[in-house]
Structure formats: C-alpha cells, structure tokens
Image 1 (cartoon, rainbow, N blue to C red):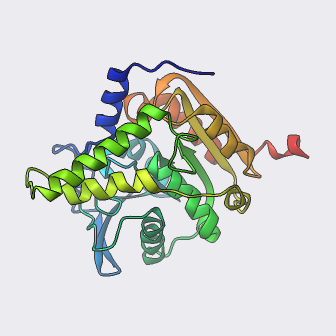
Image 2 (cartoon, rainbow, N blue to C red; image 1 turned 60 degrees about the horizontal axis):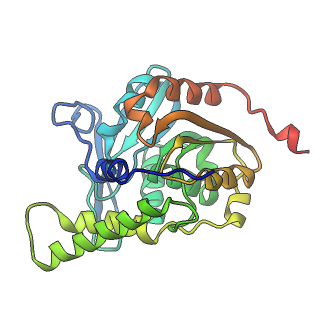
Length: 281
C-alpha cells in the first residue's frame, strides 16, 4: 500500500518530532520530590518515579522528555511503579562528550534500574523509546518482563522510514551542522545535531537480534505513521512472542494527542497472560 503524503503535513510532523515537548507548567520533569540524578560515565542522568506496584519503565521519543509522557505517567502510576527518565541530552540529563547512541542510552536506563535494585520490569517505549525497548530486550533480557514498542525502526533508511521523512531528518542535521559552524547560540545546536545524527545513522538492529528476544512484545504503530507498515510487520514477524497492533486513522503522536485507547491496549497487554505464540507452532 502506498500513501501520497502531503509535504505540509510531513513538515509539521517532523517539526513536532524535533521540538522539546517540555511544558514549563508541568510538574513532570521538574518534580523535586520524586526526581533523582545518577552519574553514568561521569554524566548526570535524571529520572522520576511515580506510583507503587510492578515496575514500569516509560521511554520518550527523540524530541521529547519526561513531560511528553504525562498521559502515560498519570494513567499507569495508578497501578504501577513508573520509572521515567530524561534520555541523555534531553531535559535535565547531560549529553556528555561522546556521540549520542541508542546503546549508550540503553546503558543509562540499566544503570537507573540497577540503582533502584529493579529487575524484570515492564517497558513502554515510543519512537526512539521503542528502539531502546527492543535493545533492552536484546542485550539485557534479565531486566525486562514485557515490552511495548510503539513505532520502532530497525534501520535508518527508506526501507523503514518514508522517504520524505528520512529526507527531512538529513536536512535537519545539515542545518544543525551549519548553525554550529556559525557558532549560533539561539539554541543548543550540539544537542540537536546529536539527536538528529542518531536518527540519521542509527539504529542497526538485525533480524538475528530480534530472534534473541524471548519476552512477550507488543509491536504497535498506526496506519498514518512515519514508519512503513511493512517494516513494523517485519519486526512483529521476527519476534517469537509478539502481538501486533495498528491503530487506525491516527499518527505518530497518538500517545500524547489521543492516549485513551493507546493506554488501554497497553494495560491489557501487560496484565493479561501472553497469547499468540500457539498459532505459530
């Protein structure tokens, strides 16, 4: 199936995706009562914890931070112990001197879980956070019980992303390079450059990597997403214990702009025993 995306629509989507969604009036991301810092490789990483119960890690997307996950924090903290962080270079977490990588951010998350003495957590990741959820399941299987990967991609190319999306990622990175060269100080172009470079050149998750995932996974997307539908389906097909969900008529930002059904589907996946592997026998 091929969609004729309007350039204006995609431009708006990309601009939204790159913006920092922090709300200055939001308690989330600025809550001194529940906020914590740890040092990972000498860089401060910030996280907050809400609620009690089974631990649930929430991971925001590339342009977000803790505040972006407000609809999920408020929904899931009623039943779960929610751990949510500003991923490296976002919010209150420091970028560090090294190039930004998904693997380093995954290590940051594990460091937080170790600091809190937490194992076997539920994980919900959206966009970049979904990539991180998959990496946790691949490289740190003891840390995850079930994961939800909403709008993940395995590779940074047009087999995964619609061409107009990938083109604008490259243009965004080139613009950040130019502003850094000009020594522009209107924003933190180093963070922007590192974030966009990460999307342009990463991740590089193989099918063999997906085969290593043994925990149940809910692979989610929408039928108006930035990720090709066939790519999402490939992820689903190559995880042993996977369920698949496409939300109709909504886009990449449904977790914030229309979270009710999104949250309910995820809650059902977490609390019910996994079903689905029997049809593949």
